[in-house]
Length: 256
Ligand SMILES: Nc1ncnc2c1ncn2[C@@H]1O[C@H](COP(=O)(O)OP(=O)(O)OP(=O)(O)O)[C@@H](O)[C@H]1O
Ligand SMILES: [Mg+2]
Image (cartoon, rainbow, N blue to C red; front, side, top):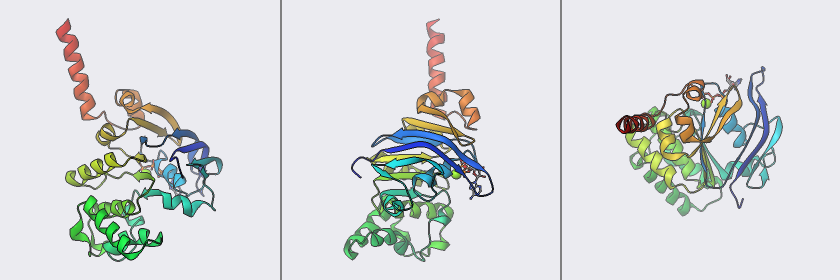
């Protein structure tokens, strides 16, 4: 995987039972881009991320990740390269203790024990949860689980990062750590979120979906000022955009 682009063409996904979650979705995301995926509850964000991580398979079209087409055969390769933070950490964490949880991925990649140990400590340091190293995973709080899920993915040193509502449940300190960590991640990154303040800081580009279809793909700044689109995505204008708009109208008033 030399170039970590993502090229999705004409994706469709209908769940067993008939819910059409994804309909004719196409986009290209270049190496190193940080893209927000926004949309109302049930819009199809998580389903799209599951398709991109080969946990579900598109029923039409194709997904090409760095010159590898996602199929059932390439799925395990894709999952090694593409780190995925689940919307619900309980779906991600399955080992009895935190150190075993974080070691699981690197060990599965065949890394030697001393490297696995190093990665566990580095990942815990990244989320500032060293004190949780030997904790029982199922006893952690919601926010602690989220931080450990993030650490477990970081320990695998992924080439592409997909995150489903990564800031939910995090206290402001842990959210800030996450934002700084994502800023320093130089590879491609897609973040499904309702947290537009985080999008403001991290993602120059946003893709908005509604009822499984892309309704906007462009600069996040334009989305922040498009009240109709924000309404359709059931989002509120970020605080910083409101301040900028107030400053602009003040300037105009002062000129008149
Ligand atoms: N396992 C499933 N079986 C059947 N339908 C599903 C399943 N998972 C999701 N859906 C349906 O697919 C649609 C898209 O759901 P999805 O979880 O992708 O939305 P989302 O944008 O991630 O929403 P949220 O913001 O609430 O996380 C919804 O109508 C949902 O009810
Ligand atoms: Mg979701």
